[in-house]
Length: 224
Ligand code: C5P
Image (cartoon, rainbow, N blue to C red; front, top):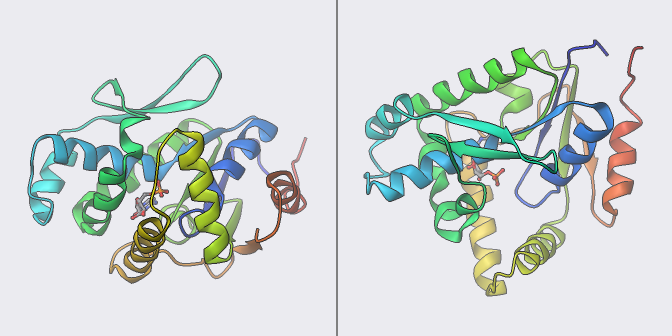
């Protein structure tokens, strides 16, 4: 693998992409690019400004006037910033999560996000996670992975994450929301959730985080 590299991790919600990506970034001395956080941040701004989320043009215009970036915090992890404000926590609310599909289905918004993501990857090596990273954004990536897990296991992981964050959630509601979100991600016309033809599929059902990371690492050959 070249000194400057891109590794993509796509897959449905709760498949463990972000946790695996963070581990890989540490092990390979690269940056973790959380592309979902970018769509979430734009959604947060639209909700705050009470912009009609059905209006794709308005969302695209909003994206043009918005600066979404990442800043490193002392523990070395990256937090997403919205016009300079650290919104890492605010973008994880159920309201933002359940409304992000509006920005994600807007072709104009996606074009802008794709440009930003490519610009970030020009500056540094990245482990990027999302839905369209291997198919649309980085078709020439050094390695492409498609991370999956059984639906029930994905729900259990999400429940644990939310519990760890001190959030109380109704299991049935969470199941319904995750199912709906996956369906929308698979079905949208632009940048849908799709396995790239040349992506390596990793099924993390029943695997611990370290086991999943090891499975991925087996494929990666670093040139010295
Ligand atoms: O990855 P995360 O669950 O934070 O993503 C939130 C939402 O953002 C996804 O459900 C999807 O609709 C959208 N997204 C996307 N393209 C990406 C990353 C996320 O459309 N590359």
